[in-house]
Image (cartoon, rainbow, N blue to C red; front, side, top):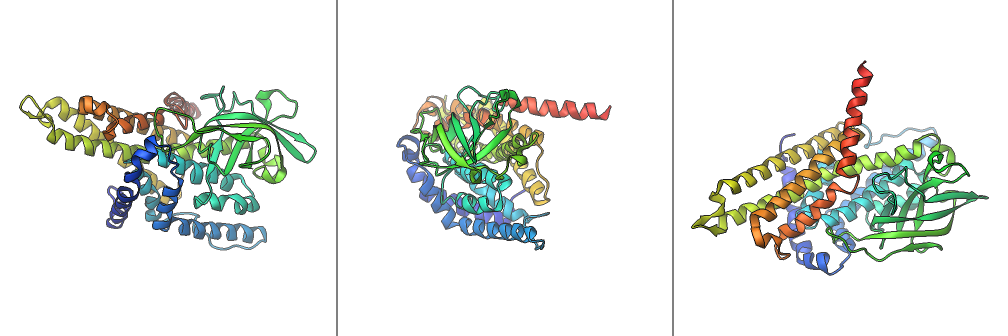
Length: 416
């Protein structure tokens, strides 16, 4: 795959038209008026039949699981090679939304991506039916709660939130911060350590599903932050929240033996990191579009600034970044279509490059616009603030570098 197909381009234009008509008019409210993005996202889902597609896919998967439990087998369309179009159609809305409001993609991705993926990947069939479908269709808002105030990049090692078994219930305590959708989440996947009286370093990583309004669960108001204002971020506080085994993903502690709880969370991280390339492509594409237009109109020293070589250098580098990011997206589509998942290291490498490219291009766009680029009325100012978070969330650049390097070193050591 080296370019979008004619059918994919038609979908791309349709989504771009929707974003221009339905979302761009609300940009100021989303950016500065504390307007939650969820109703607009639901409208997007309804307009393009995304909710119906999710329901159909979900029904087939659940039917297959129930048949397998009874010793039967039925064909599942999600196994093996898939139609590249179906995968491309999930990436296109991400790219188009990021041209206007990258935060909306973060809010959508954490809800129907990370939170739903945690339930679908680790939960029992009953748990999937109970929580996952509403998340996949955006009927309910989800939050994936792993980061803690003192943990930073060491999400697992520094985790102090706990689950203590008390009879046939668990008692959950702890706090989480920087939680996307936290203030508005209906469903929360809470990741913590199982306290069995053993040292924290030896404790299993376990995951629970919580509902808003549960006794002892407090969700903060949205936090003020540098960018992605269209993605509400908050804190969670748990004080003696009591839950049964029905809320433990997998419904048994045996499924968390060894490092399986940690590995399940890492798999979710890989999915998140792979999606950053599409987000970065949307940001870079819009920055380049705005910069080209400005360079052809803005005059200095008797000519349009696009005639100056330093400006041309900026534009050329933006185009190189756009091409590279598009190729990363195309590679992801082809791999997914072939039924091949990105490894943890591959996803980290893609995320590292994409995040750096988006931030560099957005800052260069601000520089190209000069004083105007620093003003909030110009889109490049917002895009520069929004792009920066790609280098921080889902693992900082430094963590991605470590993940890639360690993988390379391990592969080399295995050869000897």
